[in-house]
Length: 554
Image (cartoon, rainbow, N blue to C red; front, side, top):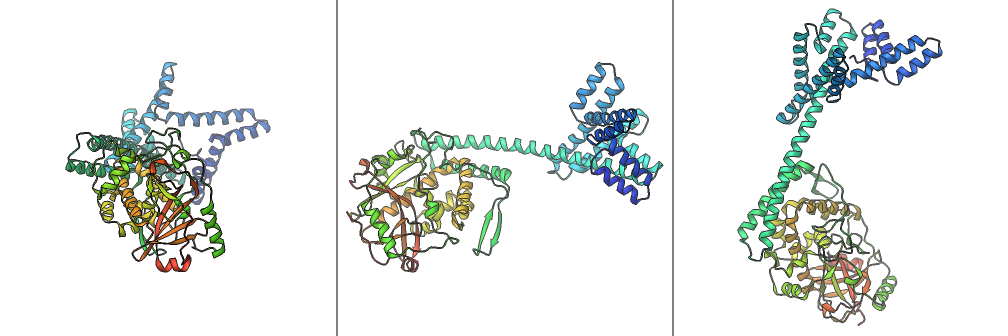
Protein backbone atom coordinates (compact mmCIF):
# COMPACT_ATOMS: atom_id res chain seq x y z
CA UNK A 1 0.00 0.00 0.00
CA UNK A 2 1.45 3.37 -1.03
CA UNK A 3 1.12 6.78 0.56
CA UNK A 4 -0.21 8.67 -2.48
CA UNK A 5 -3.80 8.55 -1.16
CA UNK A 6 -3.05 10.30 2.15
CA UNK A 7 -4.20 13.97 2.17
CA UNK A 8 -1.36 16.36 2.91
CA UNK A 9 1.37 13.75 2.67
CA UNK A 10 0.56 13.16 -1.00
CA UNK A 11 0.91 16.88 -1.73
CA UNK A 12 4.23 17.03 0.15
CA UNK A 13 5.50 14.07 -1.88
CA UNK A 14 4.45 15.57 -5.24
CA UNK A 15 6.09 18.89 -4.27
CA UNK A 16 9.30 17.04 -3.33
CA UNK A 17 9.19 15.21 -6.67
CA UNK A 18 8.77 18.47 -8.57
CA UNK A 19 11.68 20.05 -6.64
CA UNK A 20 13.86 17.08 -7.61
CA UNK A 21 12.80 17.52 -11.27
CA UNK A 22 10.66 14.36 -11.24
CA UNK A 23 7.73 16.12 -12.89
CA UNK A 24 6.27 12.94 -14.34
CA UNK A 25 6.30 11.31 -10.91
CA UNK A 26 4.67 14.42 -9.35
CA UNK A 27 1.84 14.26 -11.88
CA UNK A 28 1.41 10.55 -11.22
CA UNK A 29 1.24 11.12 -7.46
CA UNK A 30 -1.45 13.78 -7.90
CA UNK A 31 -3.40 11.48 -10.20
CA UNK A 32 -3.16 8.65 -7.67
CA UNK A 33 -4.43 10.95 -4.93
CA UNK A 34 -7.48 12.05 -6.92
CA UNK A 35 -8.42 8.43 -7.74
CA UNK A 36 -7.49 6.62 -4.51
CA UNK A 37 -8.33 9.03 -1.68
CA UNK A 38 -11.89 8.45 -0.33
CA UNK A 39 -13.98 11.52 -0.98
CA UNK A 40 -11.76 12.92 -3.71
CA UNK A 41 -12.09 9.72 -5.73
CA UNK A 42 -15.88 10.11 -5.69
CA UNK A 43 -15.54 13.64 -7.02
CA UNK A 44 -13.18 12.37 -9.71
CA UNK A 45 -15.49 9.53 -10.78
CA UNK A 46 -18.45 11.94 -10.86
CA UNK A 47 -16.51 14.24 -13.18
CA UNK A 48 -15.61 11.25 -15.35
CA UNK A 49 -19.25 10.20 -15.58
CA UNK A 50 -20.30 13.74 -16.55
CA UNK A 51 -17.59 13.68 -19.21
CA UNK A 52 -19.12 10.48 -20.65
CA UNK A 53 -16.44 8.05 -19.48
CA UNK A 54 -18.23 5.49 -17.22
CA UNK A 55 -15.38 2.99 -17.62
CA UNK A 56 -12.86 5.37 -16.12
CA UNK A 57 -15.33 6.25 -13.35
CA UNK A 58 -15.69 2.56 -12.45
CA UNK A 59 -11.93 2.06 -12.49
CA UNK A 60 -11.49 5.03 -10.14
CA UNK A 61 -13.93 3.53 -7.65
CA UNK A 62 -12.14 0.18 -7.82
CA UNK A 63 -8.87 1.90 -6.94
CA UNK A 64 -10.56 3.69 -4.03
CA UNK A 65 -11.97 0.39 -2.74
CA UNK A 66 -8.47 -1.06 -3.04
CA UNK A 67 -7.17 1.70 -0.77
CA UNK A 68 -9.89 1.04 1.81
CA UNK A 69 -9.18 -2.68 1.62
CA UNK A 70 -5.46 -2.15 2.23
CA UNK A 71 -6.11 0.15 5.21
CA UNK A 72 -8.44 -2.45 6.76
CA UNK A 73 -5.84 -5.18 6.21
CA UNK A 74 -3.27 -3.25 8.21
CA UNK A 75 -5.45 -2.86 11.33
CA UNK A 76 -4.73 -5.48 14.02
CA UNK A 77 -7.74 -7.66 14.90
CA UNK A 78 -9.82 -6.16 12.06
CA UNK A 79 -7.27 -7.30 9.50
CA UNK A 80 -7.04 -10.71 11.17
CA UNK A 81 -10.81 -11.17 11.10
CA UNK A 82 -10.90 -10.01 7.51
CA UNK A 83 -8.16 -12.50 6.57
CA UNK A 84 -10.07 -15.38 8.16
CA UNK A 85 -13.18 -14.40 6.21
CA UNK A 86 -11.19 -14.36 2.96
CA UNK A 87 -9.89 -17.87 3.70
CA UNK A 88 -13.38 -19.05 4.64
CA UNK A 89 -14.70 -18.10 1.19
CA UNK A 90 -11.71 -19.61 -0.59
CA UNK A 91 -9.75 -16.42 -1.25
CA UNK A 92 -6.37 -17.59 0.05
CA UNK A 93 -4.34 -14.79 -1.52
CA UNK A 94 -6.62 -12.10 -0.07
CA UNK A 95 -6.62 -13.87 3.29
CA UNK A 96 -2.84 -14.12 3.42
CA UNK A 97 -2.44 -10.44 2.49
CA UNK A 98 -4.80 -9.35 5.25
CA UNK A 99 -3.29 -11.63 7.91
CA UNK A 100 0.24 -10.63 6.96
CA UNK A 101 -0.48 -6.86 7.03
CA UNK A 102 -2.39 -7.07 10.34
CA UNK A 103 0.31 -9.21 11.96
CA UNK A 104 3.05 -6.79 10.84
CA UNK A 105 1.18 -3.87 12.43
CA UNK A 106 0.70 -5.88 15.62
CA UNK A 107 4.41 -6.74 15.78
CA UNK A 108 5.42 -3.08 15.38
CA UNK A 109 2.87 -1.86 17.98
CA UNK A 110 3.78 -4.65 20.40
CA UNK A 111 7.50 -3.94 20.10
CA UNK A 112 6.84 -0.25 20.74
CA UNK A 113 4.70 -1.10 23.76
CA UNK A 114 7.36 -3.39 25.24
CA UNK A 115 10.10 -0.84 24.65
CA UNK A 116 7.93 1.94 26.04
CA UNK A 117 7.39 0.07 29.30
CA UNK A 118 11.05 -0.97 29.55
CA UNK A 119 12.59 2.42 28.74
CA UNK A 120 9.90 4.83 29.92
CA UNK A 121 8.92 5.62 26.32
CA UNK A 122 12.22 6.72 24.78
CA UNK A 123 12.88 3.39 23.04
CA UNK A 124 9.47 2.97 21.44
CA UNK A 125 10.27 4.69 18.11
CA UNK A 126 13.49 2.81 17.30
CA UNK A 127 11.84 -0.40 18.51
CA UNK A 128 9.00 0.13 16.03
CA UNK A 129 11.42 0.74 13.15
CA UNK A 130 13.55 -2.25 14.08
CA UNK A 131 10.51 -4.54 14.43
CA UNK A 132 9.08 -3.48 11.05
CA UNK A 133 12.42 -3.98 9.32
CA UNK A 134 12.95 -7.39 10.95
CA UNK A 135 9.45 -8.50 9.95
CA UNK A 136 10.05 -7.41 6.35
CA UNK A 137 13.39 -9.25 6.23
CA UNK A 138 11.73 -12.48 7.39
CA UNK A 139 8.82 -11.99 4.98
CA UNK A 140 11.28 -11.31 2.14
CA UNK A 141 13.23 -14.48 2.93
CA UNK A 142 10.09 -16.63 3.06
CA UNK A 143 8.48 -15.26 -0.12
CA UNK A 144 11.77 -14.87 -1.97
CA UNK A 145 10.77 -11.36 -3.09
CA UNK A 146 11.30 -7.96 -1.44
CA UNK A 147 8.49 -6.94 0.94
CA UNK A 148 7.57 -3.78 2.84
CA UNK A 149 10.44 -1.41 3.62
CA UNK A 150 12.91 -3.79 1.95
CA UNK A 151 11.00 -3.49 -1.32
CA UNK A 152 10.80 0.31 -0.98
CA UNK A 153 14.57 0.63 -0.41
CA UNK A 154 15.39 -1.71 -3.32
CA UNK A 155 13.09 0.26 -5.60
CA UNK A 156 14.80 3.52 -4.60
CA UNK A 157 18.20 1.98 -5.36
CA UNK A 158 17.12 0.49 -8.68
CA UNK A 159 15.12 3.54 -9.76
CA UNK A 160 16.61 6.57 -8.02
CA UNK A 161 14.16 9.48 -8.08
CA UNK A 162 12.49 11.80 -5.60
CA UNK A 163 9.27 9.80 -5.33
CA UNK A 164 10.97 6.48 -4.62
CA UNK A 165 13.30 8.03 -2.03
CA UNK A 166 10.29 9.65 -0.38
CA UNK A 167 8.40 6.32 -0.27
CA UNK A 168 11.39 4.50 1.26
CA UNK A 169 11.82 7.11 4.00
CA UNK A 170 8.06 7.21 4.69
CA UNK A 171 8.01 3.48 5.47
CA UNK A 172 10.47 3.92 8.32
CA UNK A 173 8.69 7.06 9.57
CA UNK A 174 5.37 5.20 9.74
CA UNK A 175 6.98 2.29 11.61
CA UNK A 176 8.48 4.77 14.09
CA UNK A 177 5.11 6.45 14.61
CA UNK A 178 3.43 3.06 15.09
CA UNK A 179 6.12 2.14 17.61
CA UNK A 180 5.54 5.43 19.44
CA UNK A 181 1.78 4.75 19.58
CA UNK A 182 2.45 1.28 20.94
CA UNK A 183 4.80 2.78 23.54
CA UNK A 184 2.11 5.21 24.66
CA UNK A 185 -0.42 2.40 25.03
CA UNK A 186 2.07 0.23 26.89
CA UNK A 187 3.05 3.04 29.24
CA UNK A 188 -0.59 3.82 30.02
CA UNK A 189 -1.37 0.19 30.78
CA UNK A 190 1.70 -0.13 32.99
CA UNK A 191 0.88 3.13 34.77
CA UNK A 192 -2.72 2.10 35.36
CA UNK A 193 -1.59 -1.26 36.70
CA UNK A 194 0.85 0.41 39.10
CA UNK A 195 -1.77 2.97 40.14
CA UNK A 196 -4.34 0.25 40.90
CA UNK A 197 -1.78 -1.61 42.97
CA UNK A 198 -0.84 1.50 44.96
CA UNK A 199 -4.49 2.45 45.55
CA UNK A 200 -5.28 -1.07 46.78
CA UNK A 201 -2.33 -0.92 49.17
CA UNK A 202 -3.39 2.51 50.42
CA UNK A 203 -6.99 1.40 50.92
CA UNK A 204 -5.80 -1.54 53.01
CA UNK A 205 -3.53 0.70 55.10
CA UNK A 206 -6.31 3.27 55.52
CA UNK A 207 -8.69 0.59 56.76
CA UNK A 208 -6.04 -0.54 59.25
CA UNK A 209 -5.61 3.07 60.37
CA UNK A 210 -9.33 3.65 60.81
CA UNK A 211 -9.70 0.41 62.75
CA UNK A 212 -6.81 1.41 64.98
CA UNK A 213 -8.10 4.95 65.55
CA UNK A 214 -11.71 4.12 66.23
CA UNK A 215 -11.50 0.73 67.92
CA UNK A 216 -12.97 0.45 71.38
CA UNK A 217 -9.76 -1.08 72.66
CA UNK A 218 -7.68 1.93 71.70
CA UNK A 219 -4.47 1.66 69.71
CA UNK A 220 -0.75 2.01 70.01
CA UNK A 221 0.15 5.57 68.97
CA UNK A 222 3.41 4.41 67.41
CA UNK A 223 1.51 1.99 65.18
CA UNK A 224 -0.90 4.75 64.14
CA UNK A 225 1.96 7.11 63.27
CA UNK A 226 3.69 4.36 61.30
CA UNK A 227 0.52 3.61 59.34
CA UNK A 228 0.03 7.31 58.67
CA UNK A 229 3.53 7.63 57.24
CA UNK A 230 3.00 4.60 55.01
CA UNK A 231 -0.28 6.05 53.74
CA UNK A 232 1.40 9.42 53.12
CA UNK A 233 4.18 7.76 51.11
CA UNK A 234 1.67 5.80 49.01
CA UNK A 235 -0.41 8.94 48.46
CA UNK A 236 2.65 10.87 47.27
CA UNK A 237 3.36 8.16 44.69
CA UNK A 238 -0.28 8.13 43.55
CA UNK A 239 -0.38 11.94 43.25
CA UNK A 240 2.81 11.98 41.20
CA UNK A 241 1.37 9.40 38.79
CA UNK A 242 -1.99 11.17 38.47
CA UNK A 243 -0.96 14.82 38.58
CA UNK A 244 2.80 14.94 38.07
CA UNK A 245 5.42 16.55 40.27
CA UNK A 246 4.52 20.00 41.68
CA UNK A 247 6.38 22.83 39.97
CA UNK A 248 7.80 25.60 42.17
CA UNK A 249 8.50 29.08 40.83
CA UNK A 250 9.00 32.63 42.03
CA UNK A 251 6.05 34.98 41.53
CA UNK A 252 7.30 38.60 41.50
CA UNK A 253 3.77 39.92 41.94
CA UNK A 254 3.53 38.57 45.48
CA UNK A 255 7.28 38.20 46.13
CA UNK A 256 6.85 34.55 47.09
CA UNK A 257 7.74 31.11 45.83
CA UNK A 258 4.51 29.42 44.81
CA UNK A 259 3.63 25.89 43.73
CA UNK A 260 1.59 24.71 40.78
CA UNK A 261 0.44 21.24 39.76
CA UNK A 262 1.11 20.39 36.09
CA UNK A 263 -2.35 18.84 35.70
CA UNK A 264 -5.56 19.89 37.44
CA UNK A 265 -8.57 17.73 37.97
CA UNK A 266 -12.12 19.07 38.28
CA UNK A 267 -14.63 18.35 40.97
CA UNK A 268 -17.87 19.56 42.41
CA UNK A 269 -17.00 21.13 45.79
CA UNK A 270 -17.51 18.63 48.58
CA UNK A 271 -16.96 18.76 52.30
CA UNK A 272 -14.14 17.25 54.25
CA UNK A 273 -14.01 13.52 53.56
CA UNK A 274 -17.42 13.65 51.90
CA UNK A 275 -19.03 13.09 48.53
CA UNK A 276 -21.09 15.64 46.63
CA UNK A 277 -23.46 12.93 45.41
CA UNK A 278 -25.22 12.34 48.74
CA UNK A 279 -28.70 13.71 49.18
CA UNK A 280 -28.98 16.69 51.54
CA UNK A 281 -31.87 15.07 53.33
CA UNK A 282 -29.66 12.33 54.72
CA UNK A 283 -28.77 14.11 57.94
CA UNK A 284 -27.23 11.08 59.62
CA UNK A 285 -24.71 10.29 56.91
CA UNK A 286 -21.13 11.58 57.08
CA UNK A 287 -21.59 12.35 53.41
CA UNK A 288 -24.48 14.79 53.93
CA UNK A 289 -24.14 18.16 52.20
CA UNK A 290 -24.75 21.55 53.81
CA UNK A 291 -25.30 24.52 51.52
CA UNK A 292 -25.25 27.97 53.14
CA UNK A 293 -26.32 31.29 51.59
CA UNK A 294 -23.14 33.13 52.66
CA UNK A 295 -19.59 31.89 52.26
CA UNK A 296 -16.23 32.96 53.52
CA UNK A 297 -14.80 33.50 50.04
CA UNK A 298 -16.86 36.68 49.71
CA UNK A 299 -15.98 37.97 53.18
CA UNK A 300 -12.21 37.36 53.21
CA UNK A 301 -9.63 40.02 52.42
CA UNK A 302 -7.51 39.77 49.23
CA UNK A 303 -4.61 41.69 47.75
CA UNK A 304 -6.51 42.21 44.48
CA UNK A 305 -9.69 43.41 46.19
CA UNK A 306 -9.56 46.96 47.53
CA UNK A 307 -10.82 47.25 51.08
CA UNK A 308 -12.95 50.31 51.42
CA UNK A 309 -15.28 51.49 54.13
CA UNK A 310 -18.77 52.82 53.93
CA UNK A 311 -19.60 56.21 55.34
CA UNK A 312 -20.34 56.33 59.06
CA UNK A 313 -24.02 56.99 58.39
CA UNK A 314 -24.27 54.00 56.00
CA UNK A 315 -22.44 51.75 58.45
CA UNK A 316 -24.59 52.81 61.39
CA UNK A 317 -27.75 52.18 59.36
CA UNK A 318 -26.68 48.62 58.54
CA UNK A 319 -25.56 47.91 62.11
CA UNK A 320 -28.85 49.23 63.47
CA UNK A 321 -30.69 46.91 61.06
CA UNK A 322 -28.63 44.02 62.44
CA UNK A 323 -29.51 45.00 66.02
CA UNK A 324 -33.24 45.30 65.39
CA UNK A 325 -33.54 42.36 63.00
CA UNK A 326 -36.21 39.76 63.82
CA UNK A 327 -34.77 36.25 64.12
CA UNK A 328 -35.95 33.53 61.76
CA UNK A 329 -38.49 31.14 63.27
CA UNK A 330 -36.11 28.17 63.02
CA UNK A 331 -32.81 27.25 64.63
CA UNK A 332 -29.66 27.01 62.57
CA UNK A 333 -29.76 23.18 62.57
CA UNK A 334 -33.39 23.22 61.44
CA UNK A 335 -32.58 25.70 58.68
CA UNK A 336 -29.66 23.74 57.25
CA UNK A 337 -30.51 20.11 56.73
CA UNK A 338 -27.50 17.86 56.86
CA UNK A 339 -26.01 19.71 59.82
CA UNK A 340 -26.48 19.19 63.54
CA UNK A 341 -25.65 20.84 66.83
CA UNK A 342 -22.66 19.18 68.48
CA UNK A 343 -23.80 17.18 71.49
CA UNK A 344 -23.23 18.49 74.99
CA UNK A 345 -20.93 15.52 75.62
CA UNK A 346 -18.71 16.53 72.71
CA UNK A 347 -18.73 20.20 73.71
CA UNK A 348 -17.86 19.33 77.31
CA UNK A 349 -14.99 17.14 76.16
CA UNK A 350 -13.63 19.94 73.99
CA UNK A 351 -13.85 22.38 76.90
CA UNK A 352 -12.02 20.00 79.26
CA UNK A 353 -9.25 19.03 76.85
CA UNK A 354 -6.51 21.66 76.74
CA UNK A 355 -4.49 19.82 74.08
CA UNK A 356 -6.76 18.65 71.26
CA UNK A 357 -3.73 18.70 68.93
CA UNK A 358 -2.64 15.51 70.73
CA UNK A 359 -5.79 13.57 69.91
CA UNK A 360 -4.99 10.15 68.49
CA UNK A 361 -8.36 8.42 68.49
CA UNK A 362 -11.81 9.70 69.37
CA UNK A 363 -14.51 8.12 71.47
CA UNK A 364 -17.77 7.13 69.82
CA UNK A 365 -19.39 10.29 71.21
CA UNK A 366 -16.66 12.48 69.72
CA UNK A 367 -16.78 10.90 66.26
CA UNK A 368 -19.87 12.99 65.52
CA UNK A 369 -17.49 15.93 65.13
CA UNK A 370 -16.46 14.54 61.73
CA UNK A 371 -19.99 15.46 60.58
CA UNK A 372 -21.03 19.03 59.69
CA UNK A 373 -21.57 20.15 63.29
CA UNK A 374 -22.33 23.53 64.85
CA UNK A 375 -20.29 24.63 67.85
CA UNK A 376 -21.52 27.38 70.15
CA UNK A 377 -19.16 30.38 70.16
CA UNK A 378 -20.48 32.43 73.05
CA UNK A 379 -20.48 36.17 72.49
CA UNK A 380 -20.13 38.55 75.46
CA UNK A 381 -23.30 39.37 77.36
CA UNK A 382 -23.28 42.92 75.94
CA UNK A 383 -24.32 41.46 72.58
CA UNK A 384 -27.93 40.87 71.67
CA UNK A 385 -26.97 37.62 69.96
CA UNK A 386 -24.57 34.75 70.39
CA UNK A 387 -22.56 32.88 67.77
CA UNK A 388 -22.29 29.49 66.10
CA UNK A 389 -19.70 28.21 63.62
CA UNK A 390 -19.70 25.11 61.46
CA UNK A 391 -17.14 22.32 61.43
CA UNK A 392 -16.00 20.59 58.23
CA UNK A 393 -17.15 22.99 55.52
CA UNK A 394 -14.61 24.54 53.18
CA UNK A 395 -16.67 27.66 52.56
CA UNK A 396 -18.05 28.47 55.99
CA UNK A 397 -16.84 28.41 59.56
CA UNK A 398 -13.80 26.80 61.16
CA UNK A 399 -12.45 24.77 58.26
CA UNK A 400 -12.71 27.70 55.88
CA UNK A 401 -10.88 30.12 58.15
CA UNK A 402 -8.19 27.52 58.79
CA UNK A 403 -7.39 26.68 55.15
CA UNK A 404 -7.56 30.35 54.12
CA UNK A 405 -5.76 31.98 57.07
CA UNK A 406 -3.74 29.17 58.68
CA UNK A 407 -0.57 31.29 58.63
CA UNK A 408 -2.25 33.89 60.84
CA UNK A 409 -3.75 31.37 63.24
CA UNK A 410 -0.45 29.56 63.81
CA UNK A 411 1.07 32.79 65.13
CA UNK A 412 -1.37 32.78 68.04
CA UNK A 413 -2.23 29.13 68.68
CA UNK A 414 0.47 26.97 70.29
CA UNK A 415 0.76 23.61 68.61
CA UNK A 416 -0.91 24.57 65.34
CA UNK A 417 2.32 25.13 63.39
CA UNK A 418 3.65 21.76 64.57
CA UNK A 419 0.34 20.11 63.61
CA UNK A 420 0.59 21.52 60.08
CA UNK A 421 4.24 20.49 59.73
CA UNK A 422 3.87 16.98 61.14
CA UNK A 423 0.41 15.89 60.05
CA UNK A 424 -0.66 18.06 57.10
CA UNK A 425 2.62 18.27 55.19
CA UNK A 426 1.28 16.45 52.12
CA UNK A 427 -1.32 19.18 51.49
CA UNK A 428 0.89 22.08 52.61
CA UNK A 429 1.46 23.20 49.01
CA UNK A 430 -2.31 23.46 48.55
CA UNK A 431 -2.70 25.38 51.81
CA UNK A 432 -0.04 27.75 50.46
CA UNK A 433 -2.05 28.22 47.26
CA UNK A 434 -5.21 29.04 49.20
CA UNK A 435 -3.36 31.45 51.49
CA UNK A 436 -1.73 33.23 48.53
CA UNK A 437 -5.01 33.58 46.56
CA UNK A 438 -5.41 37.17 45.40
CA UNK A 439 -9.18 37.14 44.82
CA UNK A 440 -12.25 35.00 45.62
CA UNK A 441 -12.12 33.11 42.31
CA UNK A 442 -8.52 31.94 42.70
CA UNK A 443 -9.21 31.09 46.34
CA UNK A 444 -12.22 28.97 45.33
CA UNK A 445 -10.20 27.17 42.64
CA UNK A 446 -7.43 26.36 45.13
CA UNK A 447 -9.95 25.12 47.70
CA UNK A 448 -11.48 22.92 45.03
CA UNK A 449 -8.06 21.38 44.34
CA UNK A 450 -7.69 20.70 48.06
CA UNK A 451 -11.13 19.06 48.00
CA UNK A 452 -9.97 16.70 45.29
CA UNK A 453 -6.88 15.72 47.22
CA UNK A 454 -8.71 15.17 50.52
CA UNK A 455 -11.09 12.76 48.83
CA UNK A 456 -8.02 10.54 48.46
CA UNK A 457 -6.59 11.30 51.91
CA UNK A 458 -9.18 10.29 54.51
CA UNK A 459 -6.49 9.98 57.19
CA UNK A 460 -6.19 13.80 57.17
CA UNK A 461 -9.72 14.24 58.53
CA UNK A 462 -8.49 13.98 62.11
CA UNK A 463 -5.63 16.51 61.79
CA UNK A 464 -7.99 18.98 60.09
CA UNK A 465 -10.56 18.47 62.84
CA UNK A 466 -7.89 19.12 65.47
CA UNK A 467 -6.94 22.38 63.72
CA UNK A 468 -10.58 23.49 63.74
CA UNK A 469 -10.98 22.69 67.44
CA UNK A 470 -7.84 24.69 68.27
CA UNK A 471 -9.31 27.69 66.43
CA UNK A 472 -12.65 27.24 68.22
CA UNK A 473 -10.97 27.24 71.63
CA UNK A 474 -8.94 30.32 70.71
CA UNK A 475 -12.06 32.17 69.56
CA UNK A 476 -13.99 31.25 72.66
CA UNK A 477 -11.17 32.58 74.84
CA UNK A 478 -10.62 35.84 72.97
CA UNK A 479 -14.18 36.86 72.07
CA UNK A 480 -14.69 38.80 75.27
CA UNK A 481 -16.03 42.09 76.50
CA UNK A 482 -12.60 43.37 77.51
CA UNK A 483 -11.08 42.72 74.06
CA UNK A 484 -14.07 44.03 72.11
CA UNK A 485 -13.15 47.03 69.91
CA UNK A 486 -16.28 47.71 67.93
CA UNK A 487 -18.19 46.83 64.80
CA UNK A 488 -17.77 47.88 61.23
CA UNK A 489 -19.27 47.20 57.83
CA UNK A 490 -17.33 45.95 54.81
CA UNK A 491 -17.84 47.42 51.36
CA UNK A 492 -19.95 44.30 50.76
CA UNK A 493 -22.30 45.54 53.51
CA UNK A 494 -21.38 42.69 55.85
CA UNK A 495 -20.96 43.34 59.53
CA UNK A 496 -17.60 42.58 61.10
CA UNK A 497 -16.94 42.46 64.82
CA UNK A 498 -13.46 43.38 66.08
CA UNK A 499 -11.53 42.05 69.07
CA UNK A 500 -8.05 43.02 70.22
CA UNK A 501 -5.59 40.12 70.24
CA UNK A 502 -2.08 41.23 71.18
CA UNK A 503 -1.06 43.94 68.73
CA UNK A 504 -3.46 42.64 66.06
CA UNK A 505 -7.22 42.78 65.55
CA UNK A 506 -9.24 39.58 65.15
CA UNK A 507 -12.05 40.10 62.66
CA UNK A 508 -15.21 38.01 63.10
CA UNK A 509 -17.46 38.10 60.04
CA UNK A 510 -21.04 37.36 61.07
CA UNK A 511 -24.00 36.33 58.95
CA UNK A 512 -26.71 38.66 57.74
CA UNK A 513 -29.34 36.18 58.89
CA UNK A 514 -30.12 35.64 62.56
CA UNK A 515 -31.74 32.45 63.88
CA UNK A 516 -33.90 31.43 66.81
CA UNK A 517 -32.05 30.42 69.99
CA UNK A 518 -30.76 26.84 69.98
CA UNK A 519 -31.73 25.06 73.23
CA UNK A 520 -28.53 23.00 73.07
CA UNK A 521 -26.46 26.19 73.54
CA UNK A 522 -28.06 27.04 76.92
CA UNK A 523 -28.24 30.63 75.72
CA UNK A 524 -31.51 32.49 75.32
CA UNK A 525 -30.16 34.88 72.69
CA UNK A 526 -30.72 34.40 68.95
CA UNK A 527 -27.81 33.09 66.92
CA UNK A 528 -25.65 34.59 64.18
CA UNK A 529 -23.23 32.45 62.24
CA UNK A 530 -19.49 33.05 62.14
CA UNK A 531 -18.80 32.80 58.43
CA UNK A 532 -15.05 33.40 58.55
CA UNK A 533 -12.38 35.09 60.65
CA UNK A 534 -8.95 36.61 60.07
CA UNK A 535 -6.52 39.16 61.51
CA UNK A 536 -5.58 42.71 60.50
CA UNK A 537 -3.06 45.05 62.03
CA UNK A 538 -4.14 47.95 64.20
CA UNK A 539 -3.08 50.48 61.58
CA UNK A 540 -5.41 48.93 59.01
CA UNK A 541 -8.19 48.82 61.58
CA UNK A 542 -7.75 52.51 62.48
CA UNK A 543 -7.68 53.49 58.78
CA UNK A 544 -10.63 51.51 57.48
CA UNK A 545 -13.02 51.00 60.33
CA UNK A 546 -14.70 52.72 63.21
CA UNK A 547 -12.52 53.77 66.13
CA UNK A 548 -15.44 53.76 68.52
CA UNK A 549 -17.35 50.91 70.06
CA UNK A 550 -20.82 50.26 68.75
CA UNK A 551 -22.48 48.47 71.62
CA UNK A 552 -25.12 46.04 70.41
CA UNK A 553 -28.53 46.34 71.94
CA UNK A 554 -29.47 43.57 74.34
